[in-house]
Length: 80
Image (cartoon, rainbow, N blue to C red; front, side, top):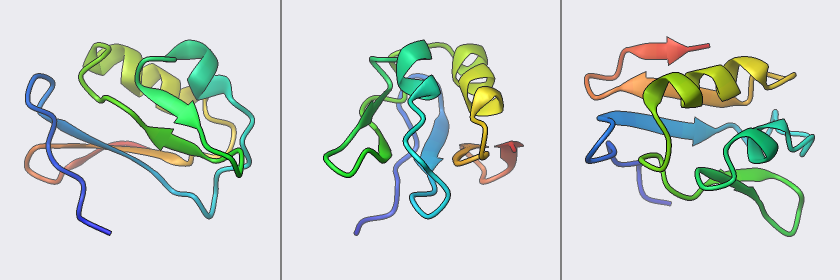
């Protein structure tokens, strides 16, 4: 699988740790244009530019298992 790319607008990388994701769907409820659930009920990123960085960080913070990792364009982890 290819390494995630820095989003052109927000200049961040949003990743979901599939080993941690239980498919609760809080992220999808909050950011349906950014994250979706696949057939295994695991979250995956659709478009990291479809919401503001603040909204994405908030959704990551609301993940009950901290499965969403947000880093800036330099690789510095913003959350968790």
